[in-house]
Image (cartoon, rainbow, N blue to C red):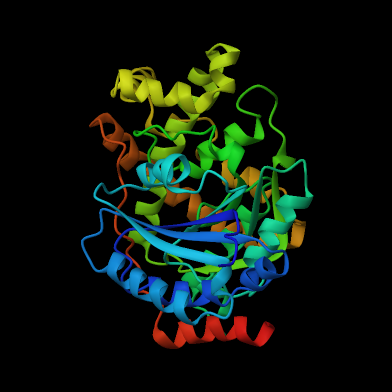
Length: 384
């Protein structure tokens, strides 16, 4: 019997009712050069689909694909797969479970993936891992998220605005996209996401990682963007979907502001250095502690557009970092985005006033057609 290789990488796939999207995503995952690199370095990895509160066949579909890959994949000796079927819906709980109890304790790196993305560059995952192995200053590596629209030959005005908005966002430093990133396991295991954090786990993770758990000034080098590592996701294009997505983000960013800029920084140094223990104990001792903070914040916030500093103006601050030619080109997207943020801010304020942070609407997107998926995956095949 061959000796069992120690797990070096644990891949967590976050899935909520992704029965239709998860098959092409897994197809792109198992086409990655990561597995050949694992074999070359005599390493192993585990792949876990964390199905949280699914009411469709996502767990069964993922299990079928996993079983087939563990029989047929040319590098099947270097990975194992399983589905963790959690009854409770919610990405925050799924993240905590994966980091603190599901992933292998031996793993050095944790790779997080959403179940509805596509990996159109075949070496994306290995590049993320290898960059983290070599860059001692970084604790997280990220690639470049690409909207599916960027593969289209002809774009509508809405689609052009959407791509311009992405260009504005990408000009900011230390961007963390929760759809795909790699993090040192030792760092992730000192993070515990509060249950009422809202849908901005990437904002919270970014802040605590870049400040060395709120003990130092923010350092952008803690998050390393890896050139050549990319993934595709389906863009929001309808006004209703855009506003709802903005509302979701504003709720989360409001909570992150309260935690990072105010409450957690006031804690003793030892509590910040052991942040996972601190937050887990607060959730256990007083399940309403964070909602109490939010309620007090809203009592002091007279205007809904002041939920956190720079809510409306942040796009224009980011826009100003672009070269003058690109700035003028992206100005319409910044204006449209600010209007959407203003409307979404009012909606977020009302939802927070009602005592709710768990706002995660089902995406109002049409879904990538079969031809579009073949095209994106064809980009991967042609570049390999």
